[in-house]
Image (tube, rainbow over all chains, first blue to last red):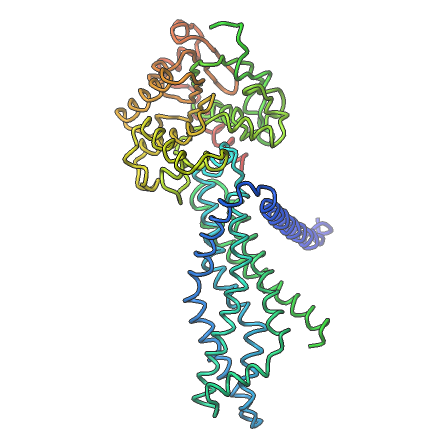
Length: 270
Length: 267
């Protein structure tokens, strides 16, 4: 039946699109419910805040060392790569600007997001997936505790606070990394490098990065938790969920990054 | 058993279906307050599904299931939560929250659903753990406990809110005979000490006859018998006799295939 075979690719594209939209719909629903619980049960707000604080320590404070090292190195790398091209135009003094803009607008939020996906997004999926396999989610329900309120809401609150904080820290470490090259390889002093960075940056550069980081927080929490809840029965399913959480999160974070960068470009002309 | 009291749990033509496969085929039963009922049945008989339906984890496809005066089949989320605060379920594997200590697990429902002071909750947690013989293990993590201890801890958590009905899912499964007997004795002691309705799902005959007031025998999603233990022993029903005397099926392969299908249908 060649006629039908010709339609196969079309129907599989349609099927994939439908699945993708359903996935995003599920994500929005999950985040909506988790967000609603922040306001629904103010009576138990103290407990929820305690859990959110605990999550914030694990997600945010625990990530500081690795985020610091990675963004510091990336700062150095950006300076080196930038200098390679700038030197040909005798514009080595612009290396601080290159590093500052690339880090604050793009690499700070993105690298932070990828580190958080690896550390926390995967952990969300593994934690919730394991709880599903061991009937802990059922146990919560039979105790009249809602798994979303109990598990997702604290994570969401923690992520929404910690992602921007980590991103600002990442920006700072990236600039410090750039300054190492600036001082050693490009006639800056530490003071003049920081001054050049300050002059190169507009507030908009930092705020667009922070806006992105908040959306990344939503994506990472939503995907990690949703993959956890979608875990089937059996421990190998937890591994599948964890992998899916990491891969899907990275994909969606880069996609969201592209969309927001394009929107910022069109709306601000920069 | 008196008929004057309203049943605390009852099923009326209760049917549950996973996908295209019906697991429970129209069950009718009543459980009186204060009774200890054992639901006995083999693998794939639908006993776990019946338990999950009675605690609101599965919705009936049709029919009614009344628990504590609420029909779970038509209950709203809020009504379901109200019922759940009045029941306790001890899961087969314990299902203790792995990131919390034993004491925190027992305290969890009290913290979430009551306005008791932390010091009061602490005292209540110690009382519940004492009752199941785990007082020394309050600050242990669930992963540090043995299988039997996990079940005891799960029972302490199920009792935290002083429930009207206690459900047990396979309390002696996966335990050695001595530890399993210990759990049976614990259930018997609770039955004497608390005026609580107890529903136990099991396939262990000895344990069933020891703790039950009445036994509900489930086979292939239908109730074969629901009678007092002595009466059940006298039953002439071939399937019940087969079960009681542990006679293997001729077509046990078919049962296994059915069991597998039930499992894959659910995914």
